[in-house]
Length: 330
Image (cartoon, rainbow, N blue to C red; front, side):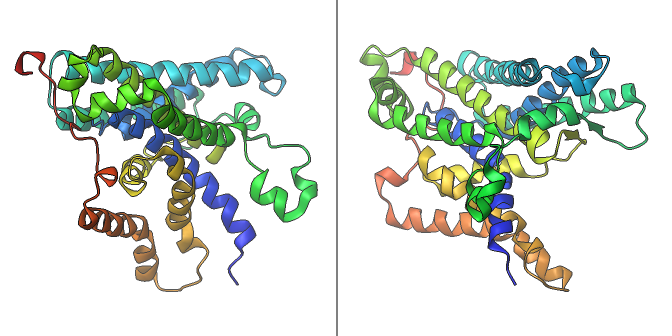
């Protein structure tokens, strides 16, 4: 039988990196920047958190006596700084140098994956491990700690209260981003920059500042998705090329949610469930399991077709998405 109580927590854990990645990309795209480097940003965020945690744990005589505050803050700050640097590089290339956004994003994905694999492999060699991975169990335990009374509440605690703090932070970030975009002056001006930068510039809005701020903030949010995957979902184990296609799924989720961060919350859980549903549906046919793995992409294509046929403006991406802005051509 299909065990729903066991399936939902697994789907949520699988969906949180997608939620953080898609929320970051939505914030970025609202400024008119199309950042296809999100998979690379998630890699960099994850490996930077691993580097900070690794150095801190190695500095302790007994890693089990880790300081809870420093054990969380060090990888968190390292992750945010690494992701911020990726955002600054992207903005410098696309905003200041006016490089093609698609090419820049794809190049950053390649760079981010290579960056993560290089430093991940270097750390593995430093440990002298016999397996191609590095485990940071002490730090992972801090990130995976759930509410102490969750276990005593039966299925309710398992479904709603059995997650680490980053999972709840991801939900709050998505709700906060949705509120800012739709109910504040800053959000209105950001959407104006993405829709028509020439008109926004004429109204006195600083286009460069908004593009830099939205893109860097979006990269930092997406980077947290990489940190969550390593420290929470993977139990603190880093393995090269372990992220799979989660970064691309996060970008697909942006289209699926029609650029709405609040919709990303249930949608990311749905995608997370579709991503692992083949593990819960009994079948002895390997080909059928591979078909199940296609479900997230099939659903995205269906939604894209439906939204395109409706042709409603609110269901479309920002008007100037992916297009460079030249004030001289205004």
